[in-house]
Image (cartoon, rainbow, N blue to C red; front, side, top):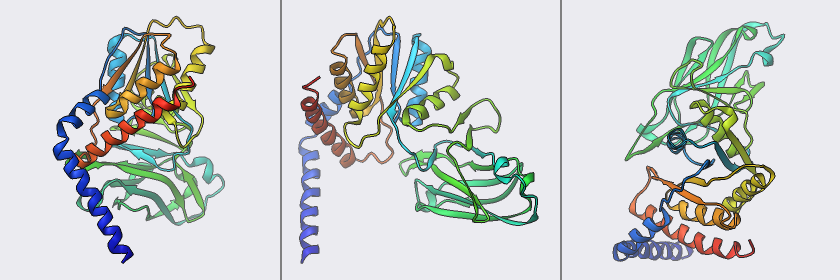
Length: 334
């Protein structure tokens, strides 16, 4: 009976959402436009929210390059990011040489990759596993977290690199195909996590576009990705906010305010880059925290969410509308 009651409640809830979307479609379109509004100002500082997906960071880079900003600031909370998201074709390169010091035994070894795919079925992520310059195995990753194992014969101290090559990146109505990698392990004894032990070579296995995985916040991760696109390191500053579970936008805004107060910078204006319906909340928060002391603009990038059905779009609008009301209340003291 309890299961039947739960089913009825869920059915009614889903029906209300569907009917609400059908009958309130003009209102939802208005709210979506309101929440996603862009209004840039003439500025010399560009703030980029560090949680933005890679395509949005690329658009932020183009905005920075075209509009002659003096600084680009990345914000985002401190966090242990367990799995590295390989979001475009490329090579995640591990350098295990120091781990194998003194291990000269020649013989069969087991090499495992802890990974999973963002999509399942026919849309699974595919990757090749290299030791030095040679492919030793290839796998289709499952949606569940799993270890993918291959044998290799040789001396461990002869290994310069172990590489995971993601090579079937794609997106469409089926979703966004990405590969997530946590670590590699050797003979079930030696574990090498991606963090602080790897680099990501985007597209090509050369030095032209590499992301060094030595971050402990989303702000630093975004900075590393923007650096790989060619921004001068002296112009880009990561401002990690403290680790919190709620009020993350507020926490990032406070970190930016505190940094700005500590610097002698002639602020001509500030533009902030956000994504989709989250934009209005970001803009409202920064304007309140900075007491509108500066000209503050906002750039809303399109939310290319590949699971963006009508119901999901409606849920986002509802969530952000409620978040705006909540933030209006918690920002009263500032």
